[in-house]
Amino acid sequence: MTTYRVKGMSGIACTILGPVKVYERWVLDDESDEGEWCDGDGSRVRVRMVGDDHIYEVDSDDCTPLEEHEWCDGCGQIGCGHGSARET
Image (spheres, rainbow, N blue to C red):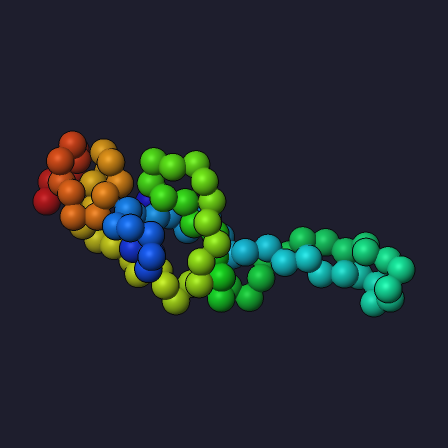
């Protein structure tokens, strides 16, 4: 699982779930809302903090990949090795 440091997310590792979805209308008139949800352009992504179930939307430029040893797989905290089963 690739994890990321996300600017403004208080030192907890996050996983990227995918691009933010955008609604694209099929008919370009004011009387119809028919359309579909499609992946956006990738400039914004949906992320989830390790150990959390809430999904956040952030700028993709604010996400930096982490090495395995940089975060704790026990608590998700960046810089904490306590409880981690991995070798550092």
